[in-house]
Length: 181
Image 1 (tube, one colour):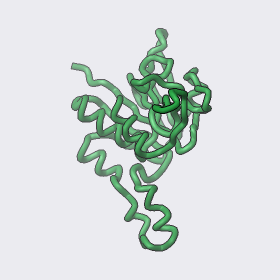
Image 2 (cartoon, rainbow, N blue to C red; image 1 turned 180 degrees about the horizontal axis):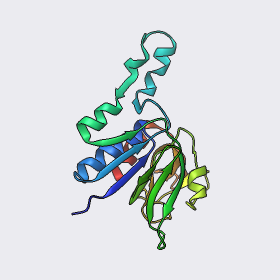
Image 3 (spheres, rainbow, N blue to C red; image 1 turned 135 degrees about the horizontal axis):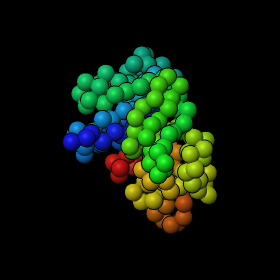
Image 4 (tube, one colour; image 1 turned 135 degrees about the vertical axis):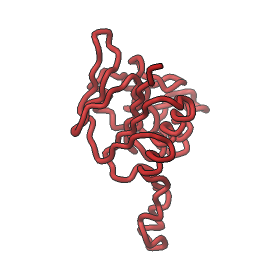
């Protein structure tokens, strides 16, 4: 049986949560997490304590390391890399994610990028951008392009009170969105 090839772009709250959930849901999938950062999972809420010197060592803010994801969850982690483009077949199905350093085979891509809506790559791929300036997704976190999903700080959601699109870049929101996929 062929393994599903899943690529998650971005880390920290939404990306790492999605990678862990993907492993639970698809134990045999080939999962790759790509980030432009060196650290993939850290407690950004602890940053004020580090800046104020209440926390002495920055490594105290690290929640999970790439080594943990690779050894414990069998998820490949590609750090300090940059996405250049997506490649698709004649039918428009995703086939590869091309980075600055390599080409990663993909059948499903999830974008979990940035603490502000970093939408340039999504726009270039033809992903719809919502009225808040973030990526437009449905309740399943699907974009307008088949097999491209987006979660976290780059997406807008429907506000529960106003029932209007809202951009809410919070870790709790990103964690919940990561579990949807």
